[in-house]
Image 1: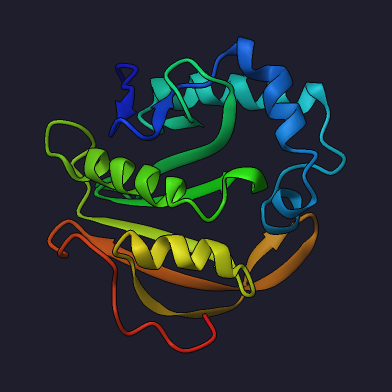
Image 2: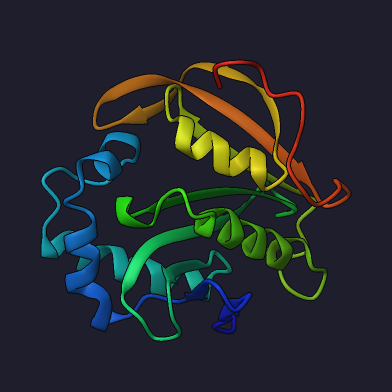
Amino acid sequence: MEDYQLTDGVVWLSRPTSADIDGIVECCQEPSISRWTTIPVPYRRVHAEKFLDGVVQGWAEGRPTWALRETAGGPVAGMVDLTPEGKDRTGGQMGFWLVPRLRGRGLMSRAVGLVCEFGFRPDRLGLVRIEWRAMVGNHASAAVARRAGFRYEGRLRLGGPQRGVRHDVWIAGRLATDPIGPAAEWPPGV
């Protein structure tokens, strides 16, 4: 797959490279990132190197991962990935994280919107559905998903493994035909 950079003039998404290794390692020291993701703990340089090898392979196989940046060519401040799934590869799953200093500014919601637009385009991935999952209690991630138009679909009991322990997860989906904008009807407390 061709290397696509995405921007709306406020956030920039580009494929992470070896020049980002130290920045990725620094970001992944943040306890709130390791709390809600499946990254290794403690997170070391070797993990970032292995992650980047996977990113290169992922792009080659049509599973893009973007580094979120505040400026074109700026340092890594987050990640967003989109993995097509299923035999027909018309469904996908999205994951993301953002450093705390940039949270609450709508940057990840913008990034998720850009990635969804990319995923749904027939001349890109041509997905018809994108799924979001997060461990129960990750209210920041749920807020991003809701603002990006994902419809809450339920709770999967022990649906997500993290470092040898299974956790309940929330699940939401967005269809290519869904209207753009925040989704209603999320239950209170999610």
